[in-house]
Length: 352
Length: 286
Image (cartoon, rainbow over all chains, first blue to last red; front, side, top):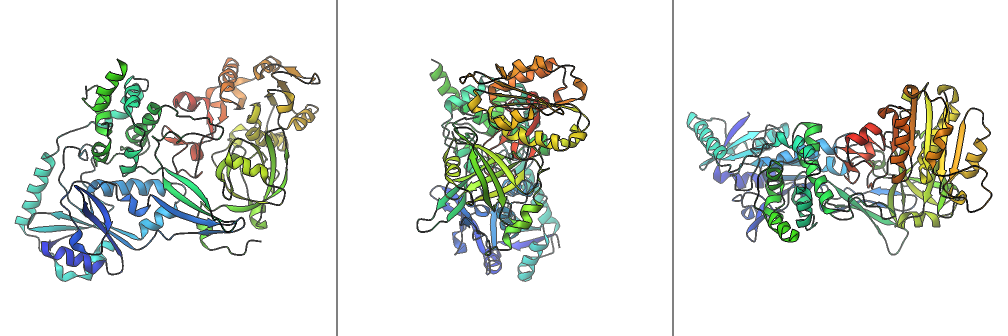
């Protein structure tokens, strides 16, 4: 059993059946956008969207959580952010984001706050349709070969369901009556047609393999100053990025006794104090230097180390940055294209 | 003693080990020496580090930060740190007394390549607080003296009163197995009997350098690197045999929090010791 068929009306009953002993997270509508939310009623789930505001890594490592509680002589780990979870509705880019997270958090030192949460979470993917911001075909993350437990491809009248793991297979076996192993030639043809149409739907193509060299060659290019002039240093690009992992550690003392809660919260390399050390020395005081670090990580460093960009093409930075600084506009500008974005117009004004 | 330990501690690299301050005293007006011992005796005895590695030190309510280990692994059991008062955490550390507890994690980082340094001449150049990490490798070389050929120490401080480990280094001038060259930028006491001038003024005193078989270790304030490295390059010491140890903001020490990232490397796991070639190769290093 590798790929099976599921009737459309059986999806929610199936999700209800498998999430009896787990927290079910899925996309729901919020204003005119979508967010991943803990589901208590499957009718809230809305798959008619391209991307959620925050990436699903917020479910694995919440924006802030307690790591341990300490007294001078004792340390008590706190893993209360971890529970058995099922995340439904992950697009291929989000699953690829988790694969990059897996590689990162298991490298050398295992980070138990991530890996234990990950080991307790099942990833259920869902097919999607690109909009003007999507870049996943350029990053080659529009398809997933592994990383998911189940993957649902929506083919109008039915789902084709890929079973990606042993644990995914266990889920299917909870409700075998919902699934049909007989996949007919016409079903295969509708998948092939859908995939062909989907692959044609991408508006933009970025040559990511050229980026490491361009980043190196344009290290001192005035483009970085222009970007820095326009950047608001708000950190939104990091918050919405599925592959950003930087965090800060906070020590919150208890008021009544000599103890502290040591918690971890999301950080962003574009924020001013990111590289500041004690005594006030700041290794990246300029916004342009901090942006350069962000894009070095996404477009150069990760490619040098792992052979692929640390960008999964989800388009969240493009949909979020108020001044139009995003993977697409930066890559195009590095490639010599004259990009008409807010930061370009603004810096012209500034230079006057 | 610590009796409430949970099984989690073993598998959680972010949980510090309680450690006791054994001795603490001022080295200069704003620099204090800390000798600490891990409270758990088994762990205190089994703790091993490489010269150049660092530990994460925490004080409850004040936070956690990386500090290089100033003691040598050739003298195990006690760990020594040399800490300047610059912020919230170090101010809290300065308020602690002997027998108080701190949190300790590590050791982390690559450390100096002591095996590759064996049978070579070693030149150690330290400026100001740069003595903190380099004292570890200096003591290691002296404790394993027959593993190394010539050992030369160049140490510069602003004023005699600001020279950390001043008495220890002055005492080393009498050793026959070490060329110990000390200098101060300016002598406001009138009692300094040694060289006056920046650390590069000591270089003419090093004679007959065998550059291909020399390893140079450098640590000091950012301004010092440029001039010292220039001297070392003039001596024809290969770029990958000039080693330096760097400072960055760190929140984890284990390559996860991102703050110490430079290009595609993390100072905490790929450093803090880098070669001069690394510095040319990765522009943000110094």
